[in-house]
Image 1: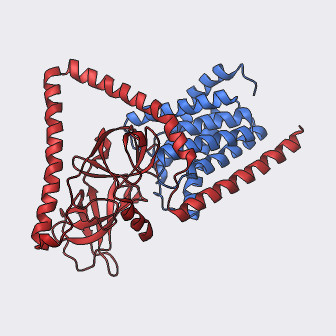
Image 2: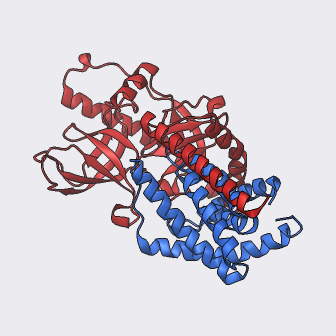
Image 3: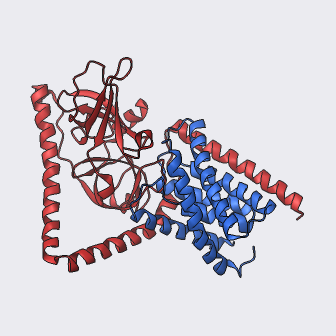
Length: 160
Length: 288
């Protein structure tokens, strides 16, 4: 993915986030569009691109949505991007189901890292209950399927 | 570049980036928050996009309601709602002043405070992360929005500005877990601290936790909380919430929970006040 694609991806993620917010559902279960694009970038571009896109998308999320202390989403998504990139290079995750499963796992890992990092650095954040988290991960996986299909068509001509 | 070399390079980059992030976060934790150029830039870059979508959505909603759903009644209703909001706001101030007068007896010893003034701003984005409660407004430094400026709704206090760019501002709302406001229990004038309690026990219900209320204090369900002004961030007398639960607590203090006065989910616009004078803010920083 080129820089232009990454920047476009961030803009699309912000728009998707806003559109999802219009449904008015409890925010815990809403899928994370930034994470879905991060998983795509990491699976397609490898660990380095995955972590750089993760860092950039995390900073956008932090600045737009987090409290006075920013950087936790960036750090969590940096690590998730790296992890997904490494996993993508070692395992066969090109099918629809494996990619959806990777997105589910990445969504859970992202939440877990965010909470643990905040706790470790002495910032009090809300403890999220497990059931809505699992639902959020599942919804992220589901949303990833059409998003990845669309991206595959659009980015196919772009070298990995 | 060989795969091995590339893997080493990416791990080295990961290590560097992790360390940089940890240092940046630690610095903010020590300083109580950060206002960097990067933050202002990102906020400024995305504000037009968010504002555009919000205006489009609100425009579409307004069009549907205005033309299809009894246009004239809708317009009249809006006008009346605006007047009601203004009246509620004035009533809130008047009630606070009356309470002060009744309890303090000596008005001459109080510092005179002028009427509050501010600007209306549209909410263009709400928090998209489950751990935080922030809002993005369509007004920024170019419109006169200052850091730490109190933000109000007709029914009470919303929060304060924690970051701003030329045309956007980020507001930390009261129910954010990292938020805190000095309050008074209006009936008894007892001072306390109200902190955000997002989703107590994972239930997802926004609440406030009222701290430092002595175990024998006179507090009952339904008591109103107003800002005390002691934190030097918010002017005194603004409605904060209503006590919903009073428990025995443990040790010296009672366990009290309150419902915020402002229903954030349905809020579309807010009033941004001028920040308190710099001297007061410096004093508040010193209290942290």
